[in-house]
Image (tube, rainbow, N blue to C red; front, side, top):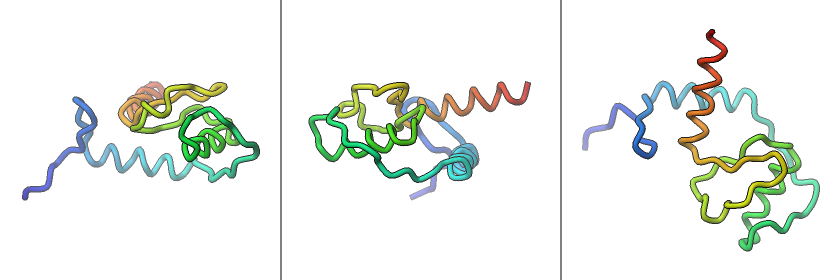
Length: 98
């Protein structure tokens, strides 16, 4: 099987180097944050741990492919798909280059 030269995210294709750079940027700026309080937002108890971590970090985004279980935004945290997040990063990168 031939290895693809692009990573597919929905109907938009991202070059592997773009995804690699985006992940590297996330790793450089991300912090591991333990939950500081218990939240009951999702009916799936395990999903509440992600809400709790996002809450403790005062995260701008909770990135998930599971928007069915993460349909409720919390505070200022927006629920986005990986594709949406990559598009947000790309837009911010373009703005920084101006």
